[in-house]
Structure formats: structure tokens, C-alpha cells
Length: 348
Image 1 (cartoon, rainbow, N blue to C red):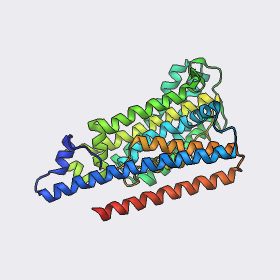
Image 2 (image 1 turned 120 degrees about the vertical axis):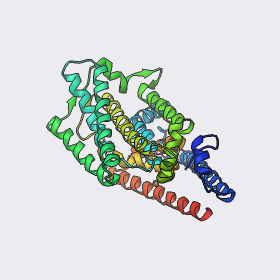
Image 3 (image 1 turned 180 degrees about the horizontal axis):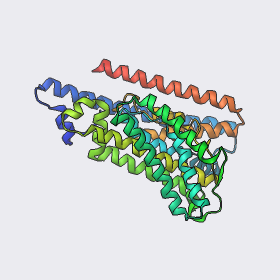
Image 4 (image 1 turned 60 degrees about the vertical axis):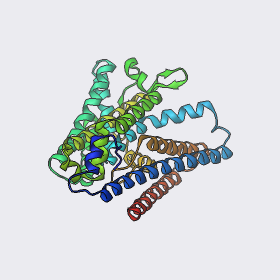
């Protein structure tokens, strides 16, 4: 659980009724240890990213070019937005495997509005609304009815994906040529794609929310100990529901970016992306069991996977080898997460 000593939540969780001085000190030692692991993970990932870039540059002369880095940023924009929100979900000790299907639904909803002759701004709003509704469905089932998050979001993943196919009869929808919508994925500010800048803004905003606000400290507290959080007055149900709604909205926004960039909406969009998104978050140091993580680590995780994918494409690595390598990276990330979790338990 990562809360700062200044926050009321930290004071309450660290000094409740019946806590003695030794217990109080032990809790703050655990907090300090959690912080140190987070920064150690981020530093290690930054070094790994640099090493990866150097290795790729020795294999292809096209890697260290301005155009390539611009394309890497654009390619990572859609999933990066979703990964930023997924960080809050996992820190809160929740899980959302339906985001890949919501990516498709958000883009399809926008394309339907565009093809009906409405402006791009309304298409974007509609796509986001669909994402919010999808997140609310997950929140209602998981928080309201108590359904297991893993089982629930696997189910809603199939339901949302099936709805995407039903809505389109399995066909792609045109979303090209609509100026107000095209800028989202194709527009540029200077030489940088707007979608890349939008992704950076999402990371910045959510990073500040998680690190500097009462809401963020509540997310950390719930992820660390939901029962204790409820006892000190945190409205755990509302916070848990909100991260699912946020996840749905972010997935839809990611889908809008992908649809705008491609000029079409496909019911297959985002297929399998949920695992890559969660991989990026875990690689960035966010704990699967909740209570630990930050947006800096997730950003580095997204960058690492984007550079890895780009490097494999540049050297012409066959697709099935790329899938294998991505799977190995996820296994390594989960293994490291488990190692640090057990080490923290021993230190406590």
C-alpha cells in the first residue's frame, strides 16, 4: 500500500485504535520498502530499455531515425492509453480482461455515428459513452454482485466482442475522410502525431491523480488492504467501481485512436491486446495483487514493448516468433513480480 505520511488515510491506517508504536513503525517500514521496490523496478526497466535499443540498433540502421521513433510513438498510443488506466485497476487489486473487446466497440460506435452523417465530435463522444457503459457493466457485476473479476471480465470480453461482430455483421466499417475524427489518429502537432501527445497527457493526468490526490491514496489503500480501508471509512465500493468505468472509457478512447489512425473500425480490433496491456503494466512494476505501482513504470513498460515490437518488425522476425517472445517477456515479468512479492513478505 503506497500512501504518504501526510494523508489522513496514511495516519488512519498507520495508527488505528490499539496499534502500538512497534506496529506503527512496522507499517511505515513496509511502505518505505514498497517505495524502494517500485523505484528499483523502474530503474531496472529503464536500463533494460536502453540495452534493448542498443541491441536493435546493431541489427538495423533504420532504428535510430526520427521517423522511426515518431512511428513507435504512434503505434503505442492506443494501447498506451489503456495501459495507463489499467495501472489504476491493478493497483486497486482489480482486473479487467475485457478492454480489448471495448477497444473494438468504441471504434465501431464512432464509425456508426460517422456513417450516419453526424460530426466527428459526436462520434468521439459516442465511442467514449460506450466505453463508460461497458465499464459500468463490469463494475455492476464485480462490485455490485460480487462476481469474481477474472471470470466476469472474461465473460464480458466474449460478450462485448460478440456484440461488435453482431453490430457490424463481421465486417469493417469505414471511418476515413471525416476531418473532425481523422485528426485524433492522423493529425500532427509539428512532426509529432496528436495521438502520441494525447497518450502522454493521459499518463501525466492519471499519474498525478494516483500520486497526489486523495482518490489515488484510496486506490493504493484498497489495493493494499480492502478490509482495513473500509474500516477507516473509505468508500471501497465506489472507488472500485470507478476504476472499472475509467478502464472502459480509456479502452474506448484507445479504440477511437486506432480507428482514426486506420480509417476503419473492425470487430477484430484490440484482439489479444488485453494481455499486452497487462504485460506492460506488470513489467512497469505494478503488483498483480494490488497496492503497488505507478505511471512512470507503466510508461516505461509500454515503451519497452513498443520498442521490442518495432525492433522485431524492422529485422523481419516472423510473426510466430514475435508471439513467442512476447509470451516469454510476460512470463519473466510475472516471475519478477512474484519474486519481489515474496521478498517483501520476508522483509516484513
